[in-house]
Length: 102
Image (tube, rainbow, N blue to C red):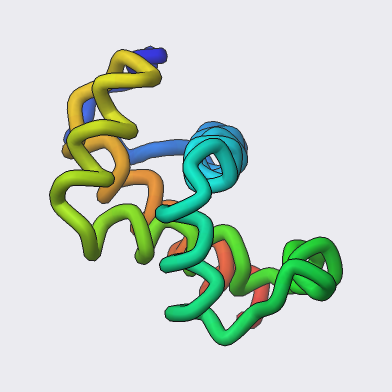
């Protein structure tokens, strides 16, 4: 899933959201990683679905991936993208949130 645009031109919010959703599946696919995500986020299994409705959830998912180099590299490899695109997706989600609030 290499973005069809040049890295320097940005990353669409839609592509960033799709990437973050893939990251959720990646996190959930490993019990140890999921446990670490829940512990760091303060979420419990019972309230993840509700938290996912919050606008800050998808950026937080990418923050989690970006904060753990092994997870970042494993996730990028699993979905077949350069790890730099994960950071670009995170920035795109930040820009979208900023644009919505103005």
